[in-house]
Length: 118
Length: 113
Image (cartoon, each protein chain N blue to C red):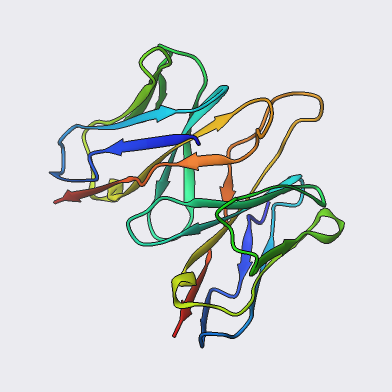
């Protein structure tokens, strides 16, 4: 168990540029989540996948945000035409959902990607 | 929309003190309430609570859930400087739209030597 890893750790970009973040979940976990966190706030849900299927996307999420999880392994989160309001810590988490049951393990978080839009 | 409110927002205590952190929630089709500790970057799991009145304990930390009054508390006894962190409360639902966790804004605990 090498934990959840995210890349890059930090990203500074100019307004209007596109950015892409990567998340590698714990290998045996079938669920993968993206959250956004700003100072003084708790993590805000963005989207989640079960295997390769994107099951839910926050209604607050702009169309500039898109996430993929090809083959149900790693995931990418892309933000197009970044705005200063996108500056935040982007956290990825994974969990194990038991097949045929309601069991869902606690979230295991990565260390996040801190995005600064100038 | 699910809602989680934590109090206090911040707390400063001295080593050896006992603290109680509060979490109230509103969620449709409640399944579980979870507590996480966030020190620098990644939140780490502390407790998962699903049943009322059953205390979960780990060392100096303990937590209990009241599903009738819709709240949970996290107690830390004999606090140490290493307990300084943001403590996050989250709820999960079951049924349709199950899966995501909704977080509160956290309680920032500072333990002074």
